[in-house]
Length: 376
Image (cartoon, rainbow, N blue to C red; front, side, top):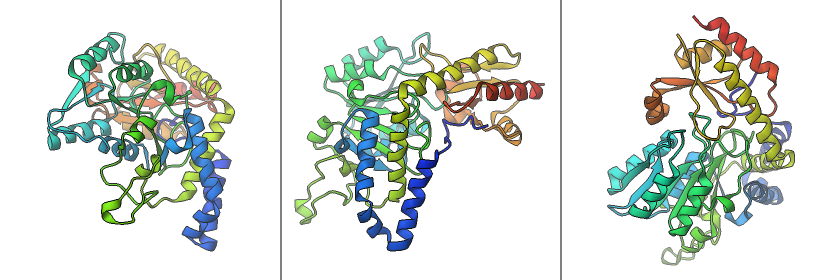
């Protein structure tokens, strides 16, 4: 029973085939030659990911993972001492570490907008901070890794557009479990990974870069060779599209597989995927609510396919190991995975259960029965 799709989901056969096909090609004719031979399939990967996000292939860059994409986007913003980065209390821990590094190295001020009483960022408060402080960058996680919360990134995007402020969205957990339209969101950057709800491979991620950001000449702090004109050191010109955010080396089989995963999800239909996976999560929250000793931690006006809970008498990671011994895959998070959120909730971590559309109601019942046996 795989209920850890917010960690790494199960890859369908076409995604596995894309990886092995390219690996076999590299083994038979060589790495550079395989890239040349697979040019059409690699080009299709850019278009498929673009179609998933509602944009164009020229706005897509591939990376090793979501954090690499996020850092590349963050490094493209040339910060000065006193600049403000505005974020929320629900941003991913590695993103928070990047903000702290900016503060330490460049004297950037990091502001975190408060939460609304019902959970999630207070939209009125963040708009007020945007208006008063004019941040250099607004950065928001669409769906935190530690909660079922879905942040209203589209409303925040409208605020940023109205004031011509750069906007970075971490879509690591949202891509593949719900429709995503980067044009509607109004972001300049959108970082994501392949391995989670998109059901792609580990070691692969991607970044959307808006035309506005490209036209402004934004590029990562350490540009690579891909797509650039290196006629002479003083004549360097960045690639005209999002490839300026890529590095030279990829295992192109992972890129091809990511493109196949994007098409796989698009063909199934993101609305149907959302309805099914979110419906299972809602059922599980209801089942947890009827259990003594299990406390559901998810808060917010809109909840997704991630379910977090504290379980009486169990450290989350110990509980995960016990469930895995019973053939049930979940994830256990500790306090340092989401310091701000977990401290506010008064817990030292959580059991995270993340169903997908291929899971069943019977699997949820089996999980609940296992927890009932394990409760003190």
